[in-house]
Image 1: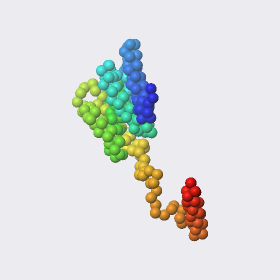
Image 2: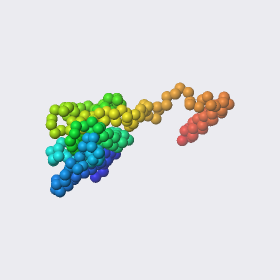
Image 3: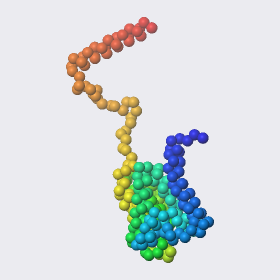
Image 4: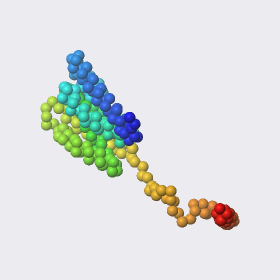
Length: 238
């Protein structure tokens, strides 16, 4: 099957996020089958042993429902970033991943924090604020799409549900805002000049008119008249 360039680009942008989500499912399957104590790898705020959780806690989930709820937002928003923000996607997601975890470690409530929802909030926030700051039609449309899809996530940044790491959601959203500011000048579409076809150069004078001497222009005129006369003779003899 042949794919056009746009289809190939979409599939390529979709590949890495899909591998990320599959990795999360494989990790959770491993944890479930072998009954791994996830607290060992969770993020524990202001505890030295909990620093590892900045790297490992987004990879862990409490149950299959928790993992399922995070998988779709990660797949969709990461694919958007890889397709529309090619240059900034990897560094922006990396910053969101690390800075969200660090902020939770410093300011989060005591206990254990796991799950990739903070990263998901960060990517949603990045796409939304990129539309605000960049102000090109492509980014604005993406911002509207994430608003329609994930407006319900706003409630998640408030401490209204026990057992939910609302700090991860809040700091993920803040980190997404910061990265959108940092990368607002990256992946900006170039403004193309209007193309009017082969006759787009409508200058009244020839571009090199001021570079030629009067004698050179006179010689060109004589040569043009001579070619015109020869062409007329050939046409008459046919």
